Length: 360
Image 1 (cartoon, rainbow, N blue to C red):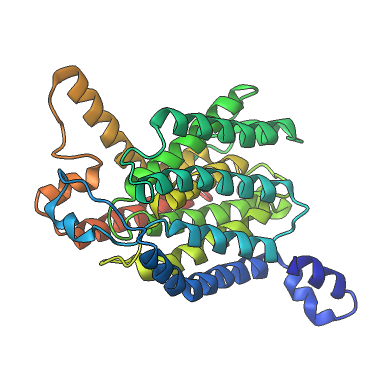
Image 2: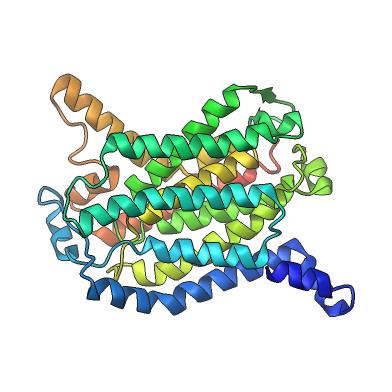
């Protein structure tokens, strides 16, 4: 909205031309979302405490988590509000990619909100059933991918790029829908599984979003994309504003979510953020790179699949507890050590992903 106002006034007030630059709007998006998170965070925490919207803790989990019982949850709503407001203020709202990304964020956030609400308000430990949750995730995920597929203007928008190989670009055709579905739904659930320790999921999300913002800027710029050997996708650069909003909102939330956490994001935040990362990677054609940069999310999800598969087939557990971060807690690692080491791994993987910009 501010972008339109400034764009209309820039012809008369030359100083406002600077706000037309995507990079500046990306920075302003970071700062806006950060300010909203920091300002509204204390208010939200007080409201959640007032209405007794607190986290429930499994009795069979690490004993150190019993102290977390009652900590306000559903704080992910703050992240979604911050991202949405910053995006509406600074993004070009005529861009289809902006609306697809916002739809994905809000729709998956709605799924998480219903799940959290049933758990903490209705005291239903199961929340939204797994079948219903998957049904709605599938519906919204396929809707987002379907819109992207139906409105694709060039073959590059539906081709699979292989990192480190400049000339390898596989035209997917209808398989684009299947790949997109698994990327969005898979990333959404993987981030949700990772969100089990204070700040564990949000900082890797911030780092991955920042890296995807760089990819969006490159593929959305005809000069940079040609220079680096990426296909040019008109309009994709505008996702830099949304990625910036994720960074700002995430860092603002981390202020309150860092150990010991004052608030948890809940499914409302984790499902939404994961889906947003997934759809962004699809738009900028970096699904494989997302798999690399989000390696912490991947190994958390894989650990759950291995644990469940092993227990069902052999009656034995591979890990002391899944997801993987609980395994290390039960081995005696203090929670802050697990969190920081996973953060370090995420940073290294994000740098590997960014290296594919040039190593092609």
